[in-house]
Length: 205
Image 1 (tube, rainbow, N blue to C red):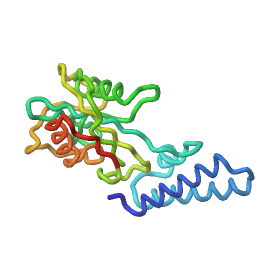
Image 2: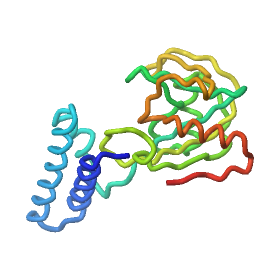
Image 3: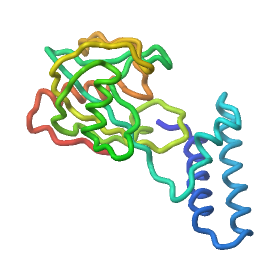
Image 4: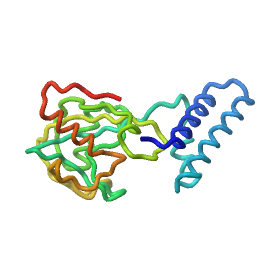
């Protein structure tokens, strides 16, 4: 569950960003800038991120604010699921990351599997579209839609890259420490549930 302070900071930032995009007077713009500054102060107070970094990540976008999209690939083979070890925290997650501009969800899943795990896959169907702060532990200052795509493994040869330290298949009963902002144990269980049922219906929200 998302912290209340983070929810409030994100809501203030969203209001400020929309106001700055559509306000007609300098008076209104000044007020929206103050609201945005307040959202940055809240994040700075409750995290270890400095003001400059918060502004770069959180308060530099323009136009109407919309959610970011995180694509995750569920690759299950011989009863085990493919996970990658993240360089950023040394924990494990399903291959994935932010969706790229001009890429479809399936294209993003294929790219992430190849780049992070050295795995060639064939996308099959969408398992879930989650509002991440309801399913993952995170203090990121964004609203995130997490799309989990079931993929079929064709081949895998891990190669060194800038994002991951390794790629292995794990039994669901013996999972490694998870990078919970990226992948939760419940999401992995959902992937195995989908694998068992051909008529599995996409879970959303």
